[in-house]
Length: 227
Image (cartoon, rainbow, N blue to C red; front, side, top):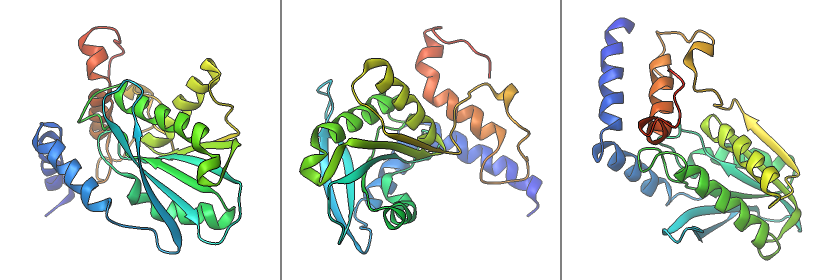
């Protein structure tokens, strides 16, 4: 099968993914399966953080170095996945590297995906996780004055927006932010040329990811930047 033959398959898969409930079941099954995995060589904890709006809880993983003494910096880490999928456990290798480089505690929320609910649901979950880390840092062995936000891809974009929200509200004094190749611009006309022969990520995937996240605002005509 040639690379050109793969493009229609990718597009059909992407369209299947965004059609609920099939796409949502796919994401939730992966998340539930991943939730059973622990990071070897670290202390693994699980907490359910209450949402401030009273709408359920946020499944959250906490990882600590097995032999480090506190209080340690707290890294609130937001996973990638184009806003539409992904889960904290997929980034165990990153957490391990962070903890080995500088002993720290990782707080990684499984925030709502855009398949479940558009913006601001996932962003609110991430901010609630940040406030929880602020309020519970000492109880988990962390330093409430050394809170870091980090993430990769869409999680990197969330790290930036979460830091800006904390700055504007004055709720949390962020010590450091570490966005890794963040998704920050939904205007595809501004993007660098993306290769069309790659199955991992194309311009079409980017347009779809931003549409899923912002579909509520666009439907209400509160946000009208053309894709």
